[in-house]
Structures are given as structure tokens and as C-alpha cells.
Length: 70
Picture 1 (tube, one colour):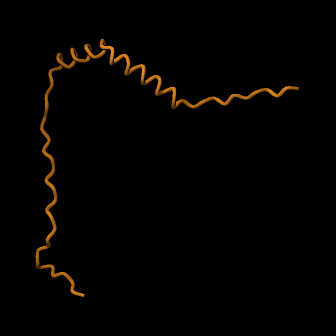
Picture 2: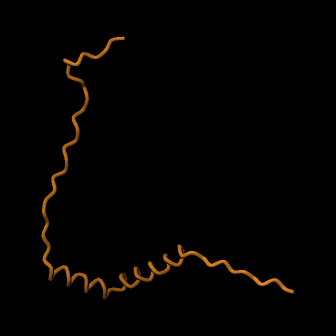
Picture 3: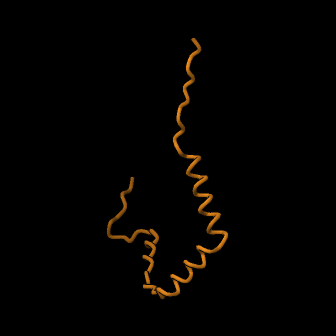
């Protein structure tokens, strides 16, 4: 078999360029106002309720032992 010649360039695609991250700044008073609005909304209350119900589903169940009749 023929071995590839290291002096010849390979036909491999170039690696994708890494994503450039940009700094984003948010206004603290605007964020706090948004949080307050979300806490007062009905959808936030439903999310809290759903989390409690989901937690109940995954909670370890206690094994119930019935006392034998004598």
C-alpha cells in the first residue's frame, strides 16, 4: 500500500473557529424589578407548585409493613 506523503497537504476541513464571547451588562434595578414582577405572576406560583409535585414523585417511598394477625 502507498503511505501518504507528509510533505503533501491533506484534504481535511479546517477546524471550526471558536465562538467569540462578548461581555453583557444588565442594569441591577431593571433585573430586580423583573424578578419582582415574575414572583407576583401566576405562572411563577404554578412553577413553584409544579416543583413541589415533581419532588413528591421522586421522593423515596416508605415501605409499609402490615402486622401479621395472630
